[in-house]
Amino acid sequence: MLQKRACDLTVEDLAAYLRQSDFGKYLDEDLLARFAEKSFAVDYRRRRFIYSANDPADSLYVIARGRVKLCRVEDLTGREAVIDILSAGSLFGESALYAAEPKREKCAVAYESARLLKIPVGDFKKGMAENRELYDYTFRLIGQRLARAERLVADFALDAISARLEKLLLEFSKRYGVPETDGVLIDISLPHREIASIIGSTRESITVRLNAMRRDGIIDFVNRKILIKRPESLATA
Amino acid sequence: MLQKRACDLTVEDLAAYLRQSDFGKYLDEDLLARFAEKSFAVDYRRRRFIYSANDPADSLYVIARGRVKLCRVEDLTGREAVIDILSAGSLFGESALYAAEPKREKCAVAYESARLLKIPVGDFKKGMAENRELYDYTFRLIGQRLARAERLVADFALDAISARLEKLLLEFSKRYGVPETDGVLIDISLPHREIASIIGSTRESITVRLNAMRRDGIIDFVNRKILIKRPESLATA
Image 1 (cartoon, rainbow over the protein chains, first blue to last red):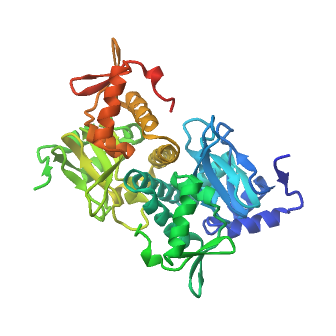
Image 2 (cartoon, chains in turn red, cyan; image 1 turned 90 degrees about the vertical axis):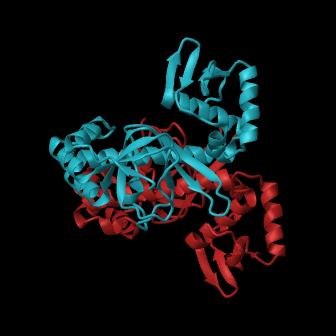
């Protein structure tokens, strides 16, 4: 079995997860209760696929805990391009709302062990139709993901690997950063191979560059995580 | 003056342009008349900027005729990353609807001499609030642009220049292709420097590769446009 249904959760538990999520504040109590009734929770261990390319796009997901990686995997080689890594509270699988074909293009993988709430796309669409605030939230979310993806496209076209690496560290220090006495700790496990899959490089090349940045006193490694010691030395994104 | 207002157009002319646009069929007559009253037409000569990064994001645009290039320009070097080239009928500037700050991130440039209808964002938002079909259209449009941008990100991360070039030719032959006896003509002027700005390469490298593809009988040049003679030889996108 690739996934485990979290059977012991009550509708109240599900409602609590929804309330804490990024879009919880846009749901009125009625819609929240309905989503809790229609959704179910699934637990995934690290590295398990939540969906793959060509799977039916029939649900949206809320991350109750853990992190989820969105990526594309090249058929023949298995090489991976990471589009994003999302944290607890995030909504994903929203392509089910607009995809030309009702199929996934990307993959979603548990980046850490994760608990997800799965909401059928029909119920979500109904919720959007009835609740303008939910529609507006989803619209802005997709728009902001578009703005980010367009920035990434431009960065790929214009920047060398080193500048892309610096921009990634800056972005992740803003999104996942925890202040420490001597810098900002990026509080997410980032193996060099994952960084390579995000910026389109190789693991070896990333290792060389990160080690050089450590020698220059720009970053350090703390418990296998990256500490940004001198953010001002990184490329301005 | 960078732009010329097309003063001789009547509200009926504007309404006709709107009716022919991609989203015209989602507007009821009342909304169409209102948009025609609130919008105005501007003519741009080739290469003129419609807006630049940091300009206020206060309007949406409909392309009445011509084509518009969306791009990012690197401050110091002036190097350009092309995000997309849109044809008559398209809506753009939609980031005004969701941007975190009311400013442009990208640039829009007249790729050919173009006539645009400019609709103030406030009126467009009001239209979306009153007309669910317009909201749904805009939602799907942004979602499909997101899906395309995410594909481009993955292509940049995974593909070498040659595969990106082949995918671009395939995409453009689908979007701008005109069937000819010996293939599909991409009916848009594509200087090698523009192709380089789309796929993140150099003009010299594009010229070398396109000449090689011509020698191999995959493409040909016809009136400075590209004819795809053997689409099956191009990378499957």
